[in-house]
Amino acid sequence: DPSSVNSKTPLNSLNLNWREIDLPEKARTKHVHRLHPYLGKFIPQLVEIFLRKYFKHGQTVLDPFCGSGTTLVQANELGINSIGFDISEFNVLITKVKTAKYDLGIAKKEIHDILEKLRSSIQKDNIQLNLLKPETYSIEITVTNNEYLNRWFDQKARNELLTYKYLIDKESYKYKNLMKVILSRSARSARLTTHFDLDFPKKPQTEPYYCYKHSRICKPTNEAFKFLRRYSLDTIRRLEEYSYLQTGA
Image (tube, rainbow, N blue to C red; front, side, top):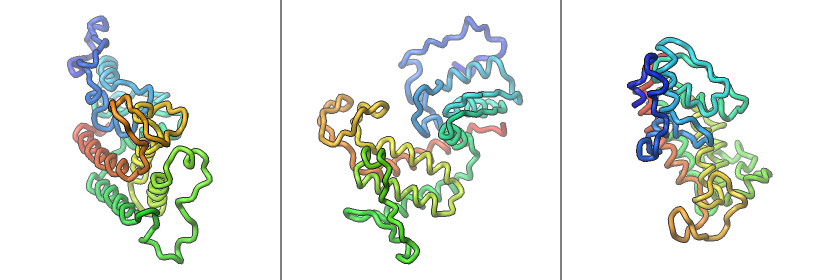
């Protein structure tokens, strides 16, 4: 149990050889740790153990390769100040979103608002921004020359993602970075790839296929809205969970 560790706990008494049954995925991806997938992420319980062993409340830990922010999140839980930086701008974005202090009322309102605006803009075979007057809108936001987007996303999914991004940029939301993380997480799931190869797909999957994950024939996804909605609700829940654990560090 990480909470039983303190500065006097002998190193040779620490059990760091966990099995899946001892530390299931749900525990390893608790609260904000699962706001966005990240390859090579620290197990938060491992970080917690060493923070409890070598740091005290009010001290400061520096993580020069903060990645997705696991150390900073756990340090905050323990009342330990933290500084992190990373060469990847996206890593810094994820870390900032995870460690930010939110007005949950505003965050919920904005997340639901952008979803509703996106929902109202979705039509049968196309997406339009009905909320805009024609004279204020001259560029087709769902058209892109980006080779990756055009190759890896069905047109419907691509349109929904690009419209969501447009709304982030257009509206005066307070928590735009939070929405960007929701967008990125949704885009990962909405790609034309198999369910069992989300991390390293070699080529777009455009036809039905036998899915080893679900043991049945699956079809590649053609939409993004269902993921945007699912991850929006999941994000709200995770922020609420972490809000009870955050300290002033």
